Length: 466
Image (cartoon, rainbow, N blue to C red):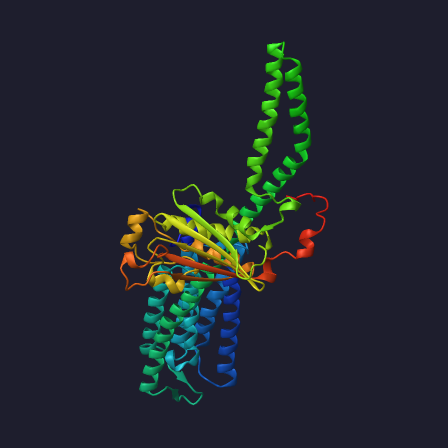
């Protein structure tokens, strides 16, 4: 057993960051920066009495105002920026801030710390290339203003300047901050985005399973309702065939009608296997639900061995046939069948408190380096030789196990992954169940249908709304 996924979900692995940021968001942040810069210049000049190059400073602030006005006029407010356009917008903000720092003392200005903002935004929402470009430029600019800047002067002409060692330490802190915050913000954004994409895939899988269940419910209800008229047609055609024994042509037509009625019955029965969400199939014995989930993988050349028994002699519990349970178990069986050599064991046990399901195979087991990360989406690892030998060209993303784990945990289950074989034993000493093992444990109250409810009247079938 290993990591499998639906090939249709391969696009989810791409880091598609184009269009993540709206123009309105960057314009709003720039308006806030303009307000802060204006207040700072005014307070420093007219309240604190510092000599500031007011003309050039307001020229820099005016350029930001002008760029905002042009952007608001040319582009719609809900415009989403491509990666390159967003990078150029942040580069303008970085350049404008660096020019203001040049006019107001360089690193002697405590607001030099704000140069971290554009790079952090880029690391959060833009590609790695754009982040590297902005990070490199920001380090270069902060280094330049450290050496070349207009000194800050008090009203009496005294230059306000920090000691050289403090300035050097401040420069080191900003550079380290650029690197650290970029890595930190990018790592967190990747985690959040990866989880959101994986949850989207889980929701799509659950919706697909729910649609199949609803469709099966319609077919099962149709088969149930048409059973009586089809039986009547079959009976009448059989009687006609006997009465028309002397007329071979008419008797053949009567037999044809009977055969077609049987065919209609078989077709409805086969179609109903997809879901069976009729009222009488909203719940089923635990073993029946597990067998139904495993059924699509029963004819793939791997033997499925089922074993269901009670630990205290109780009757097999009747559980709800929820789509998340069926799809989650089906994904686990698929993983087991994909990487088994010849056999997969599906064991069910129940007691008064919990219900346990164990899937084991005779394959190579989970990769040891990923054993602690199973259930995480979009796993990355090198192609192990043994996996390539079993499935040439296979490269798993971990979505299969993530979807199974997420859906089953939604139903109240706890899932653990492990390998059955001892790595220090030879293959012949490990026994038949030497591959991967998945244990799923539900509290009985989470999925078991109440005994009185199960024995009560079903009532009328309800209409399924699309």
